[in-house]
Length: 162
Image (cartoon, rainbow, N blue to C red; front, top):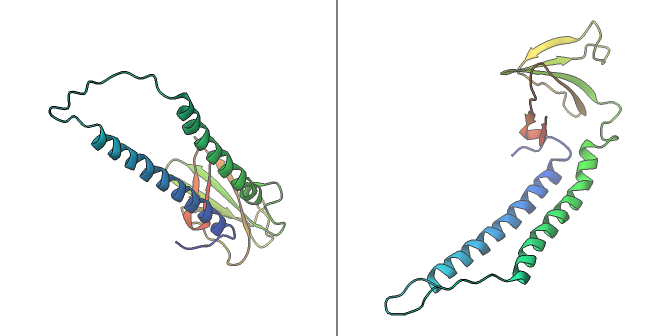
């Protein structure tokens, strides 16, 4: 996938880490499931009867605590990226402003005119469903909605915002 934003490698790294963690967990759980299926399957003439067991409290603590620690760890690691991307000081002073007006089944983008400011008479108003950005210059999207909550999603920017 194309890396357009400056923080795309960090976002991709977090997705890769989550993919690896969940992939390992998937294979461990599925391996355990297959092992139990074959080890404890019914065999003719075995004479074994099923019995009820309450469980193992230690095991329950472990399989509850371990995922919780992993999730908290991912949250702590990603907090730095969150501040970098969404923090108060994340928008550079020279960022090019673009207004995004969402309504059912369409996006309206308003671009600043020659003065570089939104809300003035020279704005290029309402370019429908097309986002154009200047190359090599930071941008900031100012979002508003006409009817309900919408999400702006630009995969190449690794940007999704309600």
